[in-house]
Amino acid sequence: MHSSKKAGQDLACCFGTLGNAKWGTSHDLKRKLDAVIELGRTWRPANAKEIGYLRSCLLELSSYETCDVVKTMKSAGFMSEEHIHDLLDTVKMRSHLAPLVQALARLIPRFKKWL
Image 1 (spheres, rainbow, N blue to C red):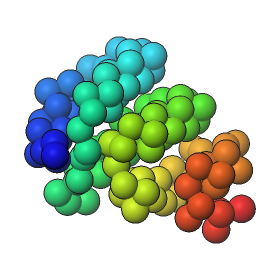
Image 2 (cartoon, rainbow, N blue to C red; image 1 turned 30 degrees about the vertical axis):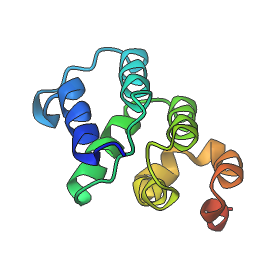
Image 3 (cartoon, rainbow, N blue to C red; image 1 turned 90 degrees about the horizontal axis):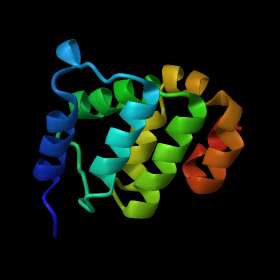
């Protein structure tokens, strides 16, 4: 079993701290997120701050890129559906992902409440 602490460290190494992060283009950020996810580790956030950090990264992407990253997270087993739900179930994320609500609801049934 892979360590969730290690996956969290991978996120921190890729992005630094929120205050000093320089991600470049949204394409660069998506590429970095995909690379961390594809390491094959399951990430269990230790607290709400860690989820908020990843959420802020996703909000830097377009809604389509965010949806693509979420699909990758689910298929790679990076996060449980419960944690993905916690990650996306905020007013800002709902607004950000509004064009793709139906796709997300098919991917994660708990999002059917958004329809």
